[in-house]
Length: 626
Image 1 (cartoon, helix red, strand yellow):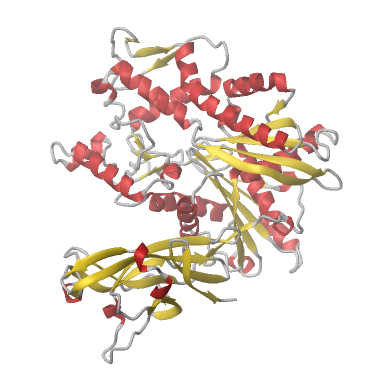
Image 2 (tube, rainbow, N blue to C red):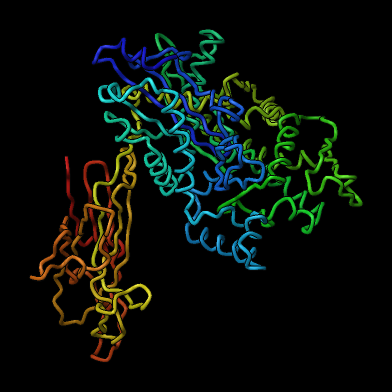
């Protein structure tokens, strides 16, 4: 489908362009449509399948990025087009949901482990520092999605700048069910910073978040209804959809509200998910292989010997990439009763012989062994499904169908195990022929029908930086010596009037889930001190040169510039009983210490602030920008 031809035929009122982005742990899909209403035939949703030269050109593109330099063949070093010796960044999606400090420590450990000779070239060859990115996972994902954006803009190159100035655009981003705010925020930044923004799409109307199983459910139910006929789904019936992907597995349940004239679904119960996708089978295989070969030989394939968790900056070099491609073929063929599977080790272990288990570079993976790789993931998936079946039963309903989609959902062994677990329940397992792309197709459908969806999750950026001014324990590393003072009670060194930014301009704000942050402040006071006090909420309009201390924002006349006082929380310490506070004796007598919590809650239309001591609310304020 040529989007330009369709868009030109539309009236100004009807023009619209919807893009779906399914950034996955192992593969990424992009689809689009040019609807002229809130409805569109499923076959008019276009899927990017031609990803360019050397990209294998499937329905999705591998979620792989490399910082390695290309060879004379000028490889793109992302997706499937990697130079032979490239070190590929993998599993980056899951790294968006890791704790930053833990990731930084792990990066340091990896670097130190590889610095035995202090030779940078040795480090690169070892795969420990792959032309090494001194960047967070969010930035790596941004670089990858920028390549996706460039390819999409090339595919729709006839969608000219003139058309973009008059055609509204909606972008729908899929995320796992259990994705925390931090991961959603990083995903939002990565997508928009990659080019999916108002600079390229001047009439960008909505950026919408939808969970992967919800997107898959809306598409799959309609696809199966179209292919299996009107009696397949009936009003009042419930079904469960399981989206089994590379990293996460997500499950959601629906009740059929009506079938004709159009299919309408109502979500029931609570969506659930877990990290038990297909890559955890790969990790189980690597652990088994490490034990079989021993660390000395295994390290020639993979420099990462710590396989107990998905690590920051997870990489694959030439040898491991080749081996995992062969194992992936075995994994896809595996089913109940399958015979033992031979696998050849790649160079430099192609001639290795170890007793027992390795014969001239060939290993044999027994049926019991590969079944063990699968079973931990399969059990978690079945537990998720049974949880939803029970949710539906508690509503007095019965589950009639389970829809299984996603790349891992195409596994025959997984299908057989789920089907066996359902046999006594009289529940039918159904795997549509579009299972691998159901999520991204559903994302486009979600965007097309956004005006009819009650639980739509629109994304908007935080309009300002918001923060408070506090005194902090003094550190020569972090603070300016000009701010050094001494606590009037304890005489301990402190940095006065430091700005703590609690919310950042541009961070994600969801229409259906206000973003809340909190910060604890310590308020010391004597019995005869004034009890009525205030805390100011400051805002700053830019992320560049954001001040870290009040003194950065005071002019020659002593007036605060650039910073704006958005809110003032006035409170009274008399509302706190002294008997409940910590009583201390300082150099200037007895004083009390109150631990107060300041909370900021940001919705698309306003910022609310609150100050509390335990369960006692001391002050509130709000600012609206409607």
